[in-house]
Image (tube, helix red, strand yellow):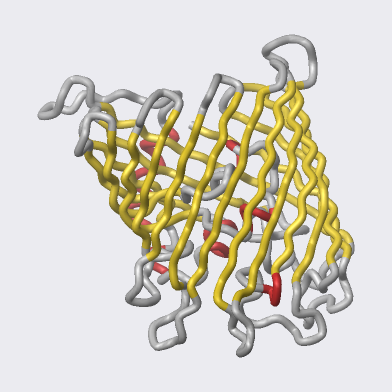
Amino acid sequence: MKPLLLLLLPLTLGLARPVAAQLPTADTTATVQLYGYVDGYFGLDFPAPTDTRRPGFLYSHNRQNEFTVNQALVGAQFDDGRVRGALGLQAGTYPEANYAAEPQVLQHIYEAYAGFRPLRRAWLDVGVFGSHIGFESAISKNNWTLTHSLAAESSPYYEAGARFTYEASPKWTLTALALNGWQNIRETNRAKALGTQVQWRPSARWLLNSSTFYGNEQPTNSAARRRYFHDFYLTYAATSRLSVLALFDIGTQQARSAGQDHDSWHTGALVLRYRLGRQPGSPFTAALRGEYYFAKNGVVVRDAGPPASEPDFFVRGGSLNLDYAPTRRVLVRLEGKVLNSRNSLYDAAEQPSARTYGNLTGTIALSL
């Protein structure tokens, strides 16, 4: 893994912009695009925890009082209109936390897939790729806010499997997936999960998304507990300066406790993003977010089992984000966030009584 990273890094950092390279044996439209991304950050939490870790249900930008890298990424993408593929490798505190359950050799894979067009308007890809669930990607710079939402932190960032995408029209995109499971590269049982995604763009201002997941997420030789999940969100550009994003997710899973049918969870978020300054090219943007997350018996967020004293998990909060983009390749961000919970937000050994949590986080992100 290290030799490959060392090979890709100088190639990527040496580019001032993505390159279209002619392949000698391919169609003249074939391109290879190299990309790179680095997200360095520093944050402080209130009240200060006993070490540099943030609450265990936060996976992105999950360290405090420490200068570190959330994600360093290099990769290449190939597309000739009929065949495509990608390979991206990563390091940082985000993959360290979010890929902890994967074998070490797989923890540095951001994406690795190959695909072709079985039909004129369709793609079939197989490998590891970004999740079809949610409006946020693992690359923080592409999201409306610096830190990820509670909805994103409790749903998959990546998936491994087969993905069939059909471009029905410029307004409709339909996707069907067969997956190893709920955010896992290495299979944990003999079952496969299914997913769907429907995106509708009625106009340039609107995007409506509906994504589903169905599967059994229990290890081999464990009792099956089937999970069904639905993610819905919409974005709307109200004016040239103001955009709105609304999300609601709901899921259910067969209960671990005898005598109960299902445990359920749901989460919602509303984000307002506003470009500061009247000029179209203003480098300043602000974003305001409100959100909540509820999980009966701590399902998904506390799959190891909730404490008997507080079986249900509930947290709500808000954040204010300020962005400064001096160039199109650099984004400087500062965000303040406050969360309030019915439960302890830290492990019992750290701060058993901490139910209100705040943080201030700053990042500088560079993309090539």
